[in-house]
Image (cartoon, rainbow, N blue to C red; front, side, top):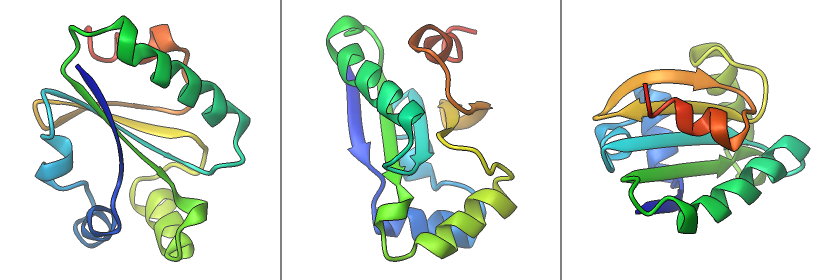
Length: 121
């Protein structure tokens, strides 16, 4: 089953303090993707579309997708600095892939097929 959740303010704040997402995020299910983006991004719109469709097409996946459109939150500048300086990625959308709580990959925009490949390695 694929679940899509908004990354909460508390989860984002903890990541900014610790330099990485908490076990509650990374270990929310066997497979986790964290998508960090801004709402105006066309590539995010494309990803958002296929992620919504994946829910029905891949019931076998134990995947949780956390997402944050960080330009829409009042801690935007702090989170932008964290993403760019600590996580080291200035492009959107930015995706971090976890399996069993361990980081297994990172990307920017990818197709649905490429997204799924991160979890099939």
